[in-house]
Length: 112
Image 1 (cartoon, rainbow, N blue to C red):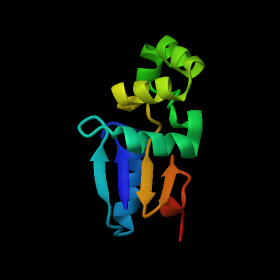
Image 2 (cartoon, rainbow, N blue to C red):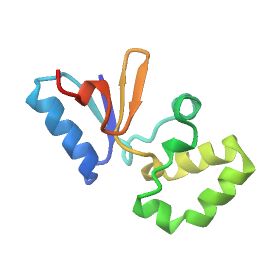
Image 3 (cartoon, rainbow, N blue to C red):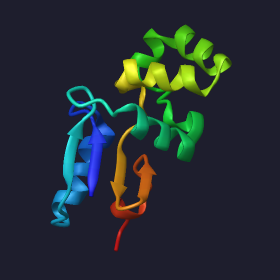
Image 4 (cartoon, rainbow, N blue to C red):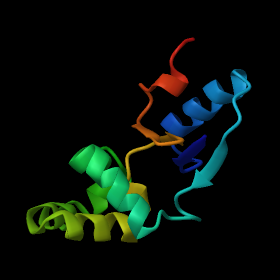
């Protein structure tokens, strides 16, 4: 399992705490230090569409005009912006095998 996020994100900290309490084995990937490549971003975007954009983030507030312009310009523009500013990605993103989940309300974090 892989958990993508940033260390200062409350949702990511909560997800890590839940996984740690359950003894789950996962690889944590800091989106700032290791931004997702184009192929991974395209996969996530195909799965989640514009829900992949974290509209509650500081980065969104700082770059709202650019995000809105990218959304109007099409998927490629929005993917390029997510690549440039990976903290625009809603967190956490959790992947296991071919499954990918977005946010906290996902099977790996729900009660067994």
